[in-house]
Image 1 (spheres, helix red, strand yellow):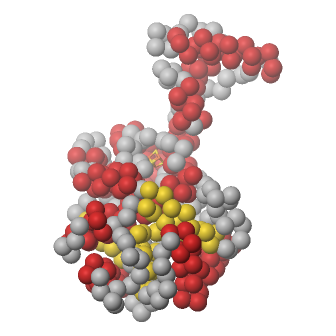
Image 2 (cartoon, rainbow, N blue to C red; image 1 turned 180 degrees about the vertical axis):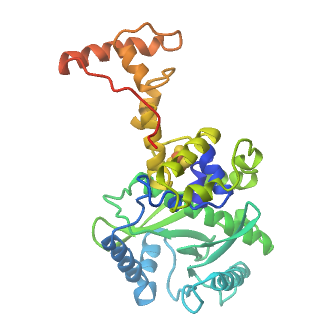
Length: 364
Ligand code: SF4
């Protein structure tokens, strides 16, 4: 959640929801804008199969990849799996966090007992005054060098290239782990700069099969961004003017008619503001609502960031259509208006005159 939010810090609605620990993926359950994040049973089964395959034979495939891609000397590697032997609840997370701290301490001491690979480490961080637990997929690989962190994902890496949105989200996750490991190292008296590598590892299946591949990327800039984010007061926490108490509870209440829930959300989002980006669809449970809302207003962002860049000074798509039809532009619109007129003529030659559909607010 933190990694996903780190990409939306300039969105007032996302910031407020994050501050109030609202699960935005579930906020609109039962409405037409319900988040569609659930994976198909086939995708879940494939993910589990992939994870099992890389843990088989004492993590042989992962260790082999680390030898090949990271030049780690993996002979006699010690692997600790903190996913087994602990209850699957908050108590279990607390116990695993203690075990993670102890094991990272051993790594820093250079102890013979220190693990080389730690699977399912649990890291802690303070988020808006609350201790949060972060369960990491594959953390703390250390072989005669700094500690590395990584993430196991089941999305395919086709021709060495994962999907950019998914890659970005995975790297943000690893960046959170690196930041939290750094804090832990500091608490243990170590130097995070020297003890931790900023090179993130991503282990994912190659193409459509289950053969694992390991990609690396430097995430120093992402770690800095997340550190800055956590060091700042959350924006929505600074000003709650105009925000009704318990508004998220009412929006999430499935016993309330959909039109009333959406009306509350319309008021809230126009009070705090939203900042739709093309990344929202993959990382925020309110994306379908926000996209529909921006589409109804004719916001250029529904065509992507490139369209926004192509229409500087133009308020919405209806206005772009008017300008393309030759309406007198204002001074800020003038440069782009010339291009729109040319585009309008080409469009008319090719398709004939189009009827313009008027924009309106999101239907409740
Ligand atoms: S989907 Fe909406 S609420 Fe979520 S980050 Fe994007 S604009 Fe903000």
